[in-house]
Image (tube, rainbow, N blue to C red; front, side, top):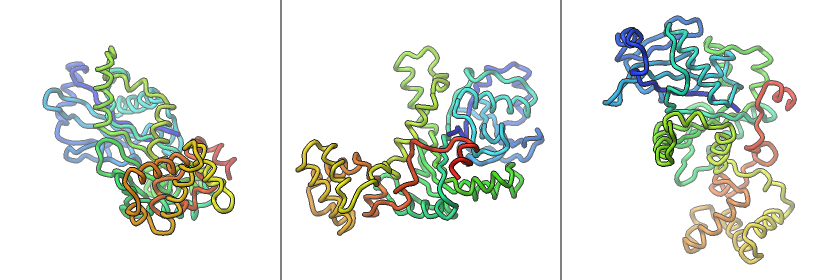
Length: 356
């Protein structure tokens, strides 16, 4: 687990007059600095939060909300600290210190500690070890089939699968980390040994992005609760909180692999439904709904019963561990049967070696 991207904003009123004078000539462009501290590129100002989390380097700009000017910085703490972003830290304070420290170095000025900044984006990532790169690509193909009504899986080319791609609230992404790492290394934008490239080829990555509107709500809630420093409450975000948000989001598409441990004729699922619904009759009705979905397809099955009944059965089936992808496809997504448990990612190179 790791925080793969942070975007932080600092009101420039918190800087010294000399620092402000040093930054003012750069208004109107975004600057990219490489790991050697040299300027890589500059472009007309754009939204840093539209950058991919695998973008290399430290990104910064001077912008304004109409009332105040800000220094905005963004980057991958893991890539800054380790040379690649396969594994890293989920400690938000540590990640912020890494990013701010690197920005201080490339800007040539001392910047305030994390408590002076506001966070506007976090990308939180989990890696899952599959048997081979072929299994990773198969998993992505299956995920792409599982379209829900509110969260449609899309593919923008390549193997990646996106959900909520245009949302400024929250979005998700699943992709082949090994192939992406190879491309980054080949382009000189990441560092990895041959062994690491081989190990990473088996990684399926799920990436959750908490975006600007999510943080506006977060700060509004902090103010309502009377938090003494509402804009620094992001530093209270824990790895467990991020893990819960990640599981809650991707659970809709992956579900609970435990439900796959069922015997012939689906008795395992029926027993689980009975435990969830509390009665044999409701369990059998939900199970019959599942069989109808498998025989007729999701949309046709939905038209065969009242909306209220449909919603009750679908809730029971999801509570039993079936995902949105399973329901839409009318089958249990094959790659989930014995390989994916959202609460059991690999978190280090050593864990990945042991999983080989």
